[in-house]
Length: 251
Image (cartoon, rainbow, N blue to C red; front, side, top):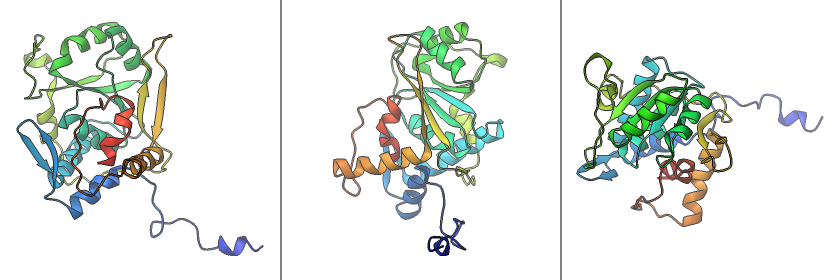
């Protein structure tokens, strides 16, 4: 009976509870420090207001293409602004982010695309040839978006043109709403990402992270490393590796 008196009328409600999600970190940064420099990539300079707007546009565009809660969006990207935007924009529409290890062979990537039930893949031009090989080996036929990183100056595979060409990443964002009222998780246990082992002893194993876990690890990173306010972080760890140990959300 003593416990019951602290439960009556004190149930979780919007005024006192919302599921934890690391997407809220970017929302706050854009609100409190909109003009603070957020991303440096070659000649690209973006502040938090722009970063947030582009992530929301991505989430909106994905939702408009039918991506919804629990759907999988795969990405085959290096450490670029687009990869950071995907860490926010994909879960903003309720979808689950699948960041593919760019160092894997085509057969292993094909297995992941099938196993994760990928419905859309965002591919950097650097890995277009590898992706085409993987696509020829898998059963799934996801929609494809091609991202052309202006900093990439290496060899390029022949890119399709005309009616069969994949949608351009920037064109996808242009279709979205930068003021998109993004979807918060209905439960902080909802999946935010799926990552795979490299498959050295068999087929890769998928490991799912939830919004709560990503939120807590992101905060723990800042505490453990003693990260100071407005720290400048030089990125080295691949973001496909355990979602960069959640540092894309920490920052």
